[in-house]
Image 1 (cartoon, helix red, strand yellow):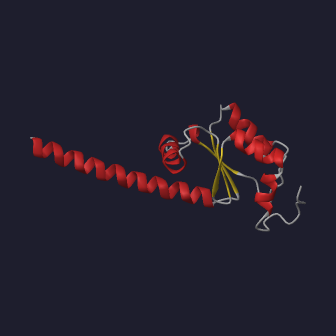
Image 2 (cartoon, helix red, strand yellow; image 1 turned 120 degrees about the vertical axis):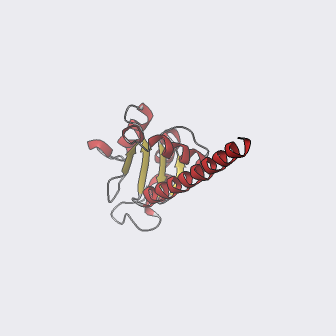
Image 3 (spheres, helix red, strand yellow; image 1 turned 180 degrees about the vertical axis):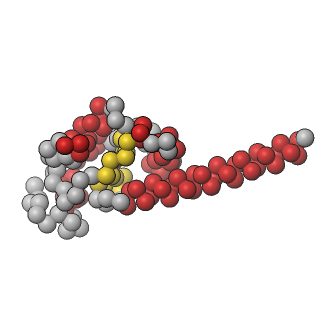
Length: 137
């Protein structure tokens, strides 16, 4: 019985590692899918402020983007808890929103708002020439 229990535990551990690897790949694909990616929850007020900053959900953008941000509402996805756990492993950040710009994690709402107020956010977006129509602040 002890051998059987160890076998089952080892199989479960390998299965969970495979699931973590698959989740990591999924998150990396999502991050690469747009210039700005926001992992969010629909009921979160901090997420709403971040989405408004980037013009998501019909808001007037305060930051100029060529294309709308890709918003992933974790509470609307059956994979939401796994994705959030994966984001925690990747960034050390447990909360939403989790904001990614050009594949780089930039933090949550307070960090993104501070970047926007300082003008650094627009510069980050503009740096690689992806927003030629946007003047630097």
